[in-house]
Length: 245
Image 1 (cartoon, rainbow, N blue to C red):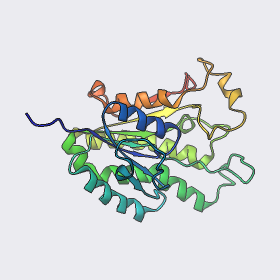
Image 2: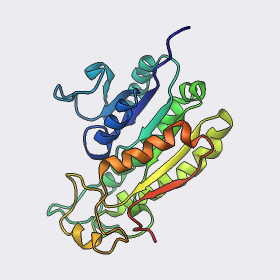
Image 3: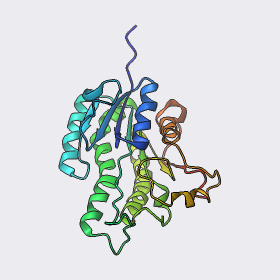
Image 4: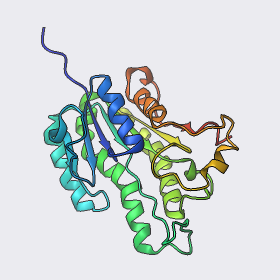
């Protein structure tokens, strides 16, 4: 009998928070994880494969994103079980304030949408043959801010995440005949290094009355990429302690 093939995940925004927890979750399950981020590989990261499994890419640059696709295709060698579009940016004002529809300049709008919205579909389209070969899954990470005005998330971030939720539905329709499932998750207030001051006031209103942990989000991502969800596509799972109710 031949050796069982190791499943492969391509993950954007892998360097911290939810992305970091996702690397740990999939690695613990024996998956090979190809990490994509703006930063070069950090030798302190203990993940299997290390630098060989890292792709440095600026998702705000369409040309660099297309270059990265060719690198990824070489690394996966024809088959990709999962693509998780986790990378996202949420610019703030000079004093850390929320940028609204009036204050956000057009260059910022464009950069946010390139990273948060366009990169997920560009990557999925570029890797569609590899996803089809594996009958794989795509998970887009949206946000609670995509469905309501959030006190800290800016207008460009919020609308890009709302668009990504709609894109997930369209992708599920188009990729489904290929046997590729496409879903999204909408995290709420997750305990990471980028939490804004005042988040505790939001937590006090949540049904579960606590922050979420990155590992809890990673668990849901893993579910959507695993054999436990083979009849689930086109949906958005809220991971937010009931913030959406």
